[in-house]
Picture 1 (tube, rainbow, N blue to C red):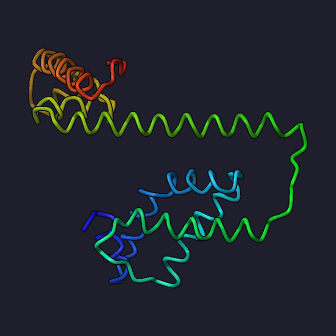
Picture 2 (picture 1 turned 180 degrees about the horizontal axis):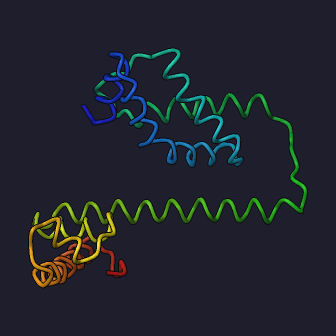
Length: 185
């Protein structure tokens, strides 16, 4: 049973935090998936919300033998197909709105690329020595300075600098193994 299925089971058992965790985990990806169907970000966002509303209102049964993400995206796809059937008429966008729409689409794509990069970094960091992982996490994700990291870890500033240097080298090696050449470390 995947983590999302566990969160859904928590929600079904009355814990709203399970639903919140599902929404945080899947809202962006689901919206982009739905946008690939409807070609309208606003409609995709509404369909994404409707997908989660359907989980809350209907509380459909989920088979733990399948991936929860697959289950959720199937519900969303069905809603998108229904939406397309209802709005089967041609709509036109005034030319003055084209540039704004293109800019919004590019921003969304950049956000997705940043998230994918972050996921790969986390995966590579997970394979590092725990001491390296700790200083990298504090430096990059918590944005602490070396003296702050030294205070948190109980080490000298020089030890933190050395460990951070070695951790970056180890992370670079892991990223190269994964086929990523430069992550700006």
